Length: 240
Image 1: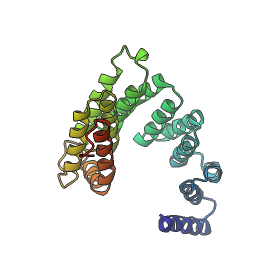
Image 2: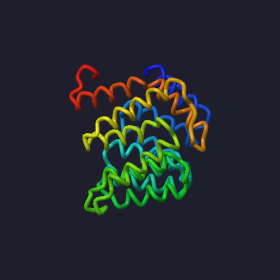
Image 3: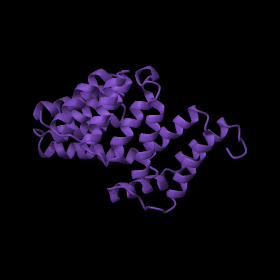
């Protein structure tokens, strides 16, 4: 990690030497300090980037990410909205939904997630956002059907991108909350098996499926840890 940070710091310095009047060096510096958990410096440098070019979509997205990490979701929404206004993409929608959820604005989170699906109907990440928003919204706002709708959305996301970590863990958590531990074990074991080399997928984006298999191979310990947690909850200590 230190090596990567050093390289990022060096890249920032090199970019500043080339042209300090472009936003990219300041974005790079912002990322460097964000990686060091120095949110004050990170926000200062990304603000510098935006002052140079107010149309820099990634700078607005990065600003939203910093504010969300700083537990300022209401302010983060403004930056993510601006980023999405400049260029609609799934990361900006993810930032918006996460910010709304962090601010307990569940209706806005659900509406934004549905807008993401309209923008990218075959993108598993967009469908996952709907599942996440529905799973966290109070039952009183969803006629008691939110959790079932959330599970359907997350299962659809996994069908498009088998083993994708975000819908996988969200679905596991939903099943665990219902004490349906057998379903949790099956989901996690399927992900582990998929990460051993099965990179076939129904996803419309082969690169996404390949990335997911790579993630499962490289982070199999994270899935194994989650599996151990589920076994512990279900009092299957030997398997844990």
